[in-house]
Image: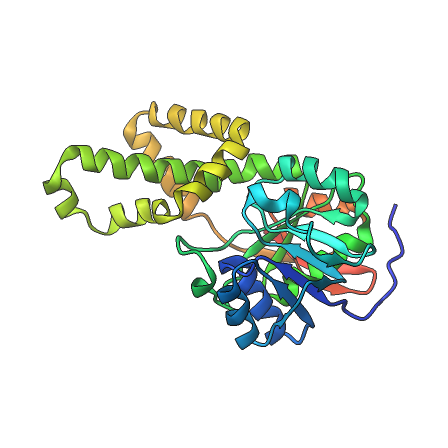
Length: 302
């Protein structure tokens, strides 16, 4: 059943954690005309955000975005003045454990999120207001999620330039294990194996090696927290990769080539503001591009 969602003025946004993701989001939203307040324990990060037009302060309302490392999410708001009516979301790369921790505290006010972007760089010096442009942003829609709050989080993602993928926390974690978490492990394995092959191998390394190992330049603590926080789905996805490597090599190469060269045609769709319909869009590989009164407009693969 669809739920009525009144049209309201875009609420302010609070961003806690002003490193690469949080700083980039705050800067992108300021550029989009949203009112943004940011906070970080690092004075240098606060100063950098202020220089980009972000109001720096401890009083947060509207949609509050937690952009801290996963281990710090549960306590990120402890010393801040947060409006008790605020919607709370996060940018963490794992969703089931985050939902367990923050869902218990905030109930239906919490909406999990994960923008699929970022680089191997980190910290406020890596801020880029264009970071989210064209990215997919998973926004979790659980049975207890309040739909008007889900929409507020989705509108933040859209304002930053991303497309929104409706998904449950469990579906998200299984999907990103295959396309993000396992690639981090494979990049580490490729780099370590090349080092074992000796200095000549590393000296000859070029484009394919660089592309395959780029993400291993990320902060090791971040990557470890990510894969260990999603250990079950990551182990299952890694087993799938091992099974693929056991295929005859010509067959494996052909199968992989077919995936990355598949047609990218899209079909525009309008979806009602209904949990079942929104999740069906995400499961079909589609995304939301904009809000239209009682509908959202987006696309699915043709």
